[in-house]
Image (cartoon, rainbow, N blue to C red; front, side, top):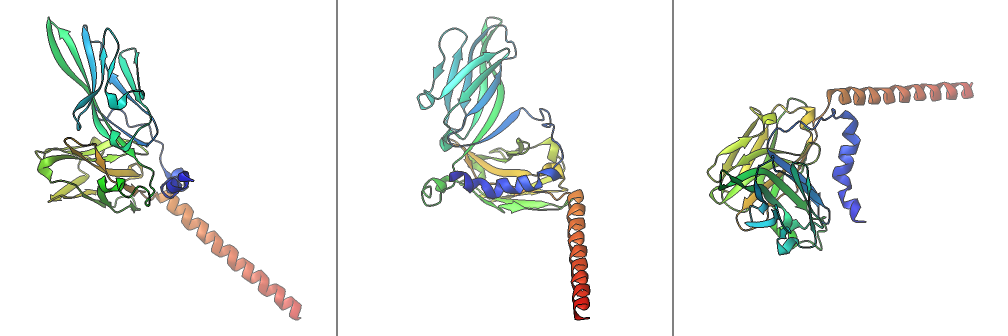
Length: 295
C-alpha cells in the first residue's frame, strides 16, 4: 500500500489537470536538466558528444561527492564506479551517449556533469558538455524512515493555491551556511527545470521563465524565495536543494504551487450557482406537493 502515500499531491494535480494549459516542454531554456525520481526507479542522462573529431574519453561525474560514475572510452570497456556497478548501462546513440542509472537510492541525488576529453591539434582538451540535477526521493514512511529523513532540508509551506498575478514565498532552511554550499530551487513535476541557482560566492542565476519575477533573501542558513505575478503555467512542485561538498544532494519535500485558473473559477462558480438553483426548485416543488396534500 505504499502507493497510497503519494495520493494527496498526485490527486491535487489530477483534479486540477483540466485547468492547466498545454505544455510544450519550454524548449532548452537552460543547459541544465532536472530529473526527479523515486527510490528504486531508473533515470537516463544524455551526454552530447557534439561530434568531436578525436574523442578520447567521456566522463559522467558526481560533482558534489567528487567521483566519476563512468568513464566511457572511445576504445575498450567502460569503467564504472563500484557504487554503481551492476546498475548502470550506457549506449552510444548518434552524437549522444545515453547513461541509465537503475535501482536509484536517495544517496544518488547529485549534480551530474557530462565532460569529454578530446584530442585537438595534438593536445588533450577538457570539454564540459552538460549538467543534470537528479533528485531521488524516498517513499515516506515516518516510523521506518525517521533516521533517513534527518538529512532532508526544511521547506515551507507544503502547498500554496494563489490566484493569477499573486505571489508565493517559499522558505528553505539549509543544513549549512551560504559560504559553504550551493543552493537551488527546482521545479520537478509538470515542467522540470532549474528556477534559481545561487553559488558559494552569492552569484545567482535565474531561469528566463522567472526573470524579473523572482527575488530571494538570505539570513544565516534561512533562504526566502518569492515568486511574483504567478501564471497557470507556473503550477508545479518546487523543491529546495543544497549542494554540500562530499555529500549527496540534499533536498526538501517541496512546495506544491497550484495557480488558480480564471476559467476554472467561472466553472466552479457556475456549478455552485446551478446547485443552489436546483435546491431552491426542489424546495419549491416539495412545498407545492405538501400544499396539495393538505387541500
